[in-house]
Length: 269
Image (cartoon, rainbow, N blue to C red; front, side):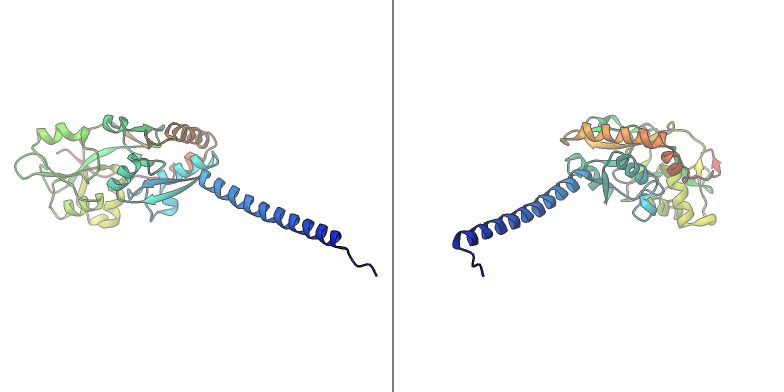
């Protein structure tokens, strides 16, 4: 019977330890690589409640959320959305905390601080009033509802000309409740958003209609990234490349085809 000498025992221990170390290093390296890949490929983006374009309650977050997700996914990035109040999401995006936010209209003030993507989707902004009000504009005590954080730039002339008081609740849903109850006279809203809210809140019994007055041309929504974000230019370029790809392969048309805005009765104010 052969009994291993001290040298053989030492060599055996060395090879066992070396093999164990190799396994441990492989596991650790794999963990670090996986963790690094995940953080590099997952982008956290701020958005909020703006049905039917985006909402935490909608399937896959709604139309614009699906577009943003599909565009980045086509470029190898995964998306995580934080649904927060619009003002907070905008401020935190401006500080660089988020990799971007959407859907936003283009204004000179925002362009000074943010880079804009190619347009995500088009929309129309309209005035809404109760159909039983002969003239919803002008005069003492008349008001228009525009939620806090929403851009009012294109309406300033109209507001001043008609001596309107601006009411600014937290969300657009509050504006429609206020209009239906007679607490405000007008609302400035996306046509698609208005149609969605009117149907969900009041159904066919609602007296709210779109006014036949064009205060602004058809508008567009964008994905935006703060200029102070270290990867701002790269994020916009990546998104634009993805948007182009999903438009060319038919994914974009499939997503946007689900958005149907019914035509509502209109009345001249």
